[in-house]
Image (cartoon, rainbow, N blue to C red; front, side):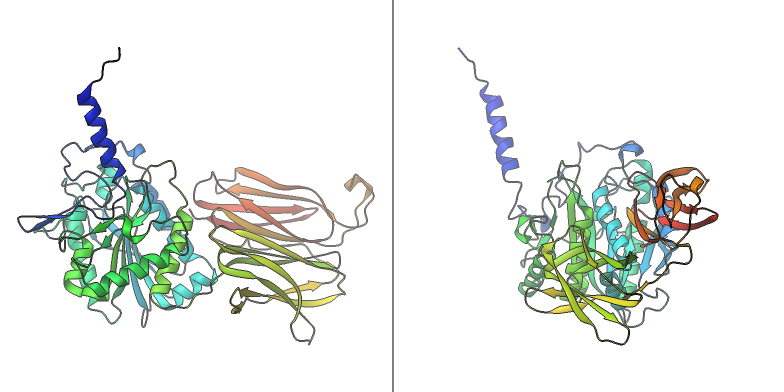
Length: 520
C-alpha cells in the first residue's frame, strides 16, 4: 500500500499554482500603509532575506575589466564620446557613451537614454545593450538614420562596485540601486544618474525615451508595463503602442504588454521610471526591459536589440528604411559581375530589383530577387550579371515592400577590364563582429612552369593570413592558386577576443597588410 505524505502534496500544489500564475496579467500590487508593494519586476522574491549575498566574479559574467577594454575600442569610433557622469561608492567612474553622428555637436538631436547592469548578476540586459551599441556604431542605413536624428546616452554598467565585489543585486553599501529613487539621501550612483536626468530634461533636447535594462528569472522577454491607475489612461495607450511596435520586429520573441503589469494600485515611487512619471508625466516613455535570466532559451540578443531600436525610432516618428541592408558588394570575374548583398533585418520585404547603368545610359532593371518578407535573421543574396564587355558599370538595388513602397540602395561601381595590379582592400565592415569581408585583386600574371602545378596562362599563388597584434598567426584564409580576378573572402571570428588584428596578402613578390578591429 502506497503511503501519501499529504503535507508534501499540499506543498507541491501550492508551488505549482504559484509558478503556473507567474505569467502575470497583474503583479498582485497592494497598498500597505499607503506604500505600493508589488512583485519584483525582475521576478525575484520581494523578501531578500534569503538572497545570495555574493557571487564569485567568474560567475558574474561580463566584468569591469571587460568594460574598460571595450571602452577603448568604442572610443575608436568617430560616433562616440566617452565620459563619466559621477563616481560609485568605491570611486569607480560611471562611464557613459554619447553616440551620434557628431557627439560633440548635439544641437537639434532627439534624446534617448539607456542604462544597464543596475543588478550585476543580470548580464543578459547588458548583452542586449551591447548589441544596441554595435548596431548604432555600424554603417547600416538604419544606424546612419538613427545617428543623424538622435543622440543616445548609454551607461553600460551602472553598478560597477557590485560587479567587482560579486554582489548580485546591490552596490558596495549593500543597497539595491533600482529601488533607491525615493530614499534619501540617495546612494552616489542614483544621485549621479538623477542629476544627469535633471540636466537633460532641462536642456533644449530633453529625454523622450528612457530604457532601464534588466534580466528576469521568469525566463521571458518583456517590458514592465505601468497600469493607468499609476499613470494615466493616455500614457497607458502610449506604452501599449511602444511595446507592440517593438514586438512587431521580433514576433514571438517578446511578450505582450499584458505579461507583467505594474502600478495597478498606484504609482510606485522607488524606481527611475517613477521619477520620470512624477516629474515629467507623459513626455517621457520610461520603461524597464527584462531579458531572459540564465534560461535555456537565453540568447538572440542581436534580434532583441534590433527590435528595440527599431521600435524606438517608430515611436519617435523617425522614418527608417524597413529593410536594413548590411552590405552590398560586387566582384568582376571572367566578363561577368557577381553582386552580393546581406540584410540584417527585413520587414514586409517583397524583394529586390537589380538595376544597372553603363556609360551614359539610365538605370535599367536587369533582374529580380525575392525577399524573405519579415525576418530578424541575417539573410544573404546574390545575382550574376553575365556576358559583359569591357567598361565601367554601376549597380543599385531597388528594395520593394509588399505594399509597393520602395527604397534605393547606394550605387556601387565596377570595372570590367584587363586586370593590371594587385590590390588588397580595407575589410568591410570595420570594426566588425563577428564577420567581415576582405577583398583583393589578382592581375593577369604569366606563371613559370615551376610556379604552377598545371598549365595556366594567368593568375598567382595567393596566401591570405590573419595575425593578432603580437604577430601570432590566427588563421590562414587562402593558400591556393587564384586566376586573375577580384575576390571577396568572408572572415568570421567567433572565439577571439576584441582587439586589433592584421591581415596580410602575399602573391608572388607582392605583399601587403592591413589592420582591422574586432569589436564585441
